[in-house]
Length: 292
Image (tube, rainbow, N blue to C red; front, side, top):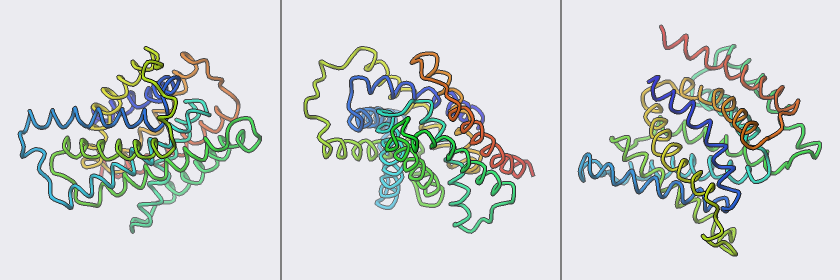
């Protein structure tokens, strides 16, 4: 469990930087589509070689569940974050995504699990942090649309994660990840084409560093980390799985500052710190419960 968490902690923290670099010469949703379709096909090949046809066999209900979760996580969740990174720093995007565990607490509450007072306090504190992070958008210093896109993405990601624990998924976790990535990639492709992202785009215009960034997203961000996340959704408490959201921003902010010279503003540091503290309160309850 901790190996899988470690992969999600570190690898996904670096994906915000990779996304920003890929977007330098690639369109938003089509680059996300290329990432997940490539990773999904590679994973299908791995499952076929490792487990044979039985490893890929699913019934209609399992396939439908995989498509639903894949679209929520990878088209709604990741796709909106990719779109937002055209207009906001990668570190800020990661800090906004740190709100995912807060939405998960609210979703589990709607599901019948009454949150503890500490969890509610964490949610409220996290919402204050989101308000501080969003303040520059209200003042016009950063693009409001980018902030809204990320927040909407966090909601769809949280709902997808919540649904994955409650609906019937394929028995083979690798097959489940493959179908989710193919569904999410197709969803991103359709949105990209609907937005006309292919117009004026030529593969020859893509820089080497953008290709390298896309390759890292395919191999490490999708094949390695997303599969680890899919396994964790089945094997660990949801709020514990969501702890990645307060480690990823630290990695993302540092990499954005070091590699892309993204500014570390007062609202970013203060709001990010408040969100992280709120998430820590939430996951502390999960950790104490898992020890009992």
